[in-house]
Amino acid sequence: MREVPLWQGPIDPRALPDALLTAARPYVVRGAFAHWPVVQAARQSDVALAHYLMRLYNGVHIGLFQLAPEARGRVFYADDTLQGFNFSRHATTLDQVLTGLLHLTATPEPPALYVGSTTVEAVLPGFLDANVMALGARDALVSLWLGNRTRIAAHYDLPDNLAVVAAGRRRFTLFPPEQLHNLYLGPLDPTPAGQPISLVDFARPDLERFPRFAQAWEAAEVVEMDPGDALFIPSMWFHHVEGLAPVNLLINAWWRETPEYIDSPLTALRLALLTLRDLPERDRRTWQHHFQHFIWGADDSTWAHIPAAARGLLGPIDEAVARQVRTQLLNQLKR
Image 1 (cartoon, rainbow, N blue to C red):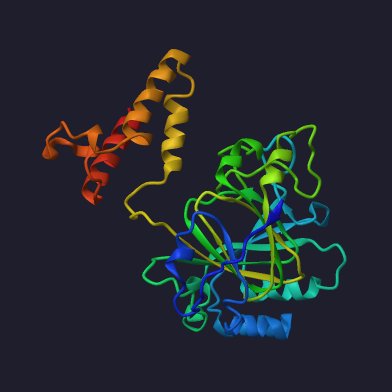
Image 2 (cartoon, rainbow, N blue to C red):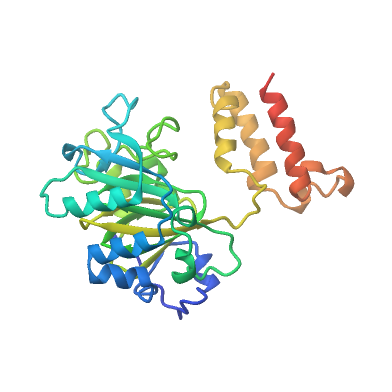
């Protein structure tokens, strides 16, 4: 394991550099958002943070995960059958969550409270006007993550991710995408929050059950972040996230470098599992050649012999082509 490297280039908090936001590996930027009003409030006290958020809150209900103390903050499955979860979900208000968090700050082993992936502008209108992400022209989804000492299992996200610690402290443990085999991912469905997660408990890794995790651990990168620090996580990098303080607030932005009409590759993975995985080995090898030809090894020579007007999906994919292909796939899947 090693430290996530610091970004070495210049940082203008009014316009973050494209070189950072398109990097192929994670970087941490210390203090880049220390000027944010929410960070200034959090540095005063947890109460000051709560007051700042409540001045912006519009009363919309938010989703809350609640875990019993014995879960020790680990948002996970209920047991080894992986059929249920170890948390309950509630619709509540931000003031109730903040009151609960402040009430539990002195409790040695509190229940965990966790508000995840809540769109900032939906509940805190005006927040982003005062606390600017500086992502340029990127159309990013900005979310908040609020809770006490929680542990979110290692998972990946398709979009690129800029995560800013606004209050408390966070520890991120990251793994490059090629460590997939060593992280022992659980099912594609059901999952605690949408993406498949590592079944390894990072606090107590069971290397008899998950022996390859030792190799993943050697490749891991870790960083502990304070208010105002930011972390860039490229698409598909695995990250395990821990809240280390009694009150933690993270603001993150997600965006993709591809147009919205380009579907998630996870859709292709699900279809491949449905249509390819259980074929006889001979047929799987045949289709492997097709994927190599049309996807992994594709270049201009792949379709140069076809007139441009007749290339269809083999030509440039625009919104009209994407819509046509999506309709064809839906019709096929309905058969």
